[in-house]
Length: 599
Image 1 (spheres, one colour):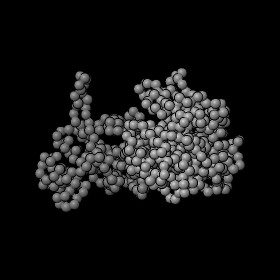
Image 2: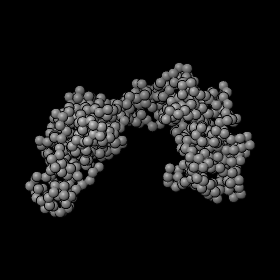
Image 3: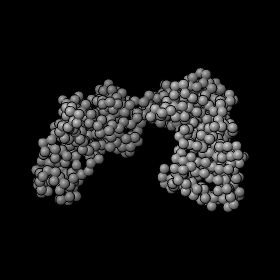
Image 4: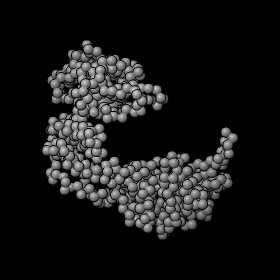
């Protein structure tokens, strides 16, 4: 955004003295300043200065918003249009403000149909045209509404922003003349934009009425057409499933009739889905929370409303389970049933694919994991993720640890292919697969699974991509795989890949003690990546040693992680971290070291 001009700055632009600026202001030949502190301390917007400078030099410029005078009665709307440029579109309303034309430009979002058939549309996605697209949209608006002349108009642009009050901007177009073309083609006109923020109060003053806006969740072409069909009056209503209330209620109702899901598992799944449903919003209007208390300054052109999701209540249990009423074993059992139903029977990989049931079962599994969790923090560590976490690495890319481990892989057995992690691995989209290339499920000596896929990279080179199901050993389980490790191996510059250990049997996966999701594991600096590496190794060491690491042990581990260059493999010997003074077999309150800010 551009800034502001003092009286001296505006005088330089106009080529006059500061006192002459005061005289022009007093005569009404220039606009009143936006800010007045005293006789000499006055401020105008830079966009208004660009209009004055352009006209003084003979260049074409559009009319600055700040050159318009406030009005007493509502400015009449004289026309409106939907304009397009490439994938962008905008709704333009033109108003007559004391003889000048003010065009309010609202970028339109794309309507998002809900993936769950039968549900109302999802909130529309944000649209953010760049400067070039803005100019093209303004040009298109001028063609449709103003006889092709974008310079006789004052443009007020509404910046589309997620979950916040819109930013209003004065956009002044300046014609810089024809640009030279180095290829000998006809020169093209060059326009630039000078932009200044506009406040809601300033726009209301120029319109003489609240700002006619589209609610962000339904700011689409379909909503504009609904407004037009209602005679351009604010009486049309569009339903949108803003908070997924309808989707969750519909999913829960669907699961009440699924064969194979019953009893306690069914009640757990439905309770997790309905935990955040706000029944009191069913069929009601969507409030103006997007404008943070500025509702009085906005007039919705179309009313946004929640759908009537209370229609599902008759199919649902009257009493639901609370957060602390389900044990981890019960939640895991429910997740296991949901996973089997999704992958074997009703999901898109099952015998009877159903889009609605696939979404409902998947959503229920996710919400069971996030909702039902005890004091030990076992949430997000249940089936279908309770025994593994997916990590990705590329072979032939210098990862010697991964390559050494991959040499031990053999084709997965038929029984291994029925595991939940096997189904999740096969369900992943690995990217653009090579026609006729390798895509197989493999298994190491400990029964851990991996999917090896040949894909085409962005540079059309073939990459052997290995997606690994890393085992997880929870805090209440005895022992851990790889307890006889000799070294811990962390690949240089790794992000998505797993960590490895060297054992008497060869290179193996280092088990985790928690779900890591997409977090990266790096070393060589004090940031979040090394913090993840240190914490993952700490969890493994504490399971192997049967006790908590002491402060001295944690400091030793942290120094090893950050002290090794990021461009080199990190190798930690067993005796480096399991040594006298580093492990407390009767632990008190020992906290893991946390890294400094950084990535």
